[in-house]
Length: 86
Image 1: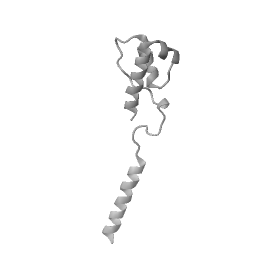
Image 2 (image 1 turned 60 degrees about the vertical axis):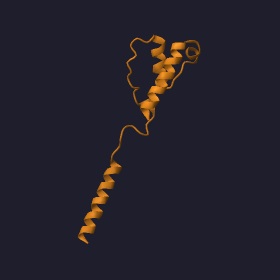
Image 3 (image 1 turned 90 degrees about the horizontal axis):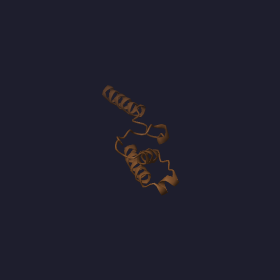
């Protein structure tokens, strides 16, 4: 009887500990987390702006349509940051 009570108590404590812990920022929106930092040295200003905008999933439609560097940066930023959020 005493052994059974001890085992049940241990199981309750283990399960309670699992429920009390959190990992990372699951359940929060990406807007609350700062975007990751990337080394974009050597890239054009338009690429950097596109990369930053893509990372937070905000897009300047005119630049996306008219500036190839912005478009490539936006696509790369969106892709890189979405992989990091998973």
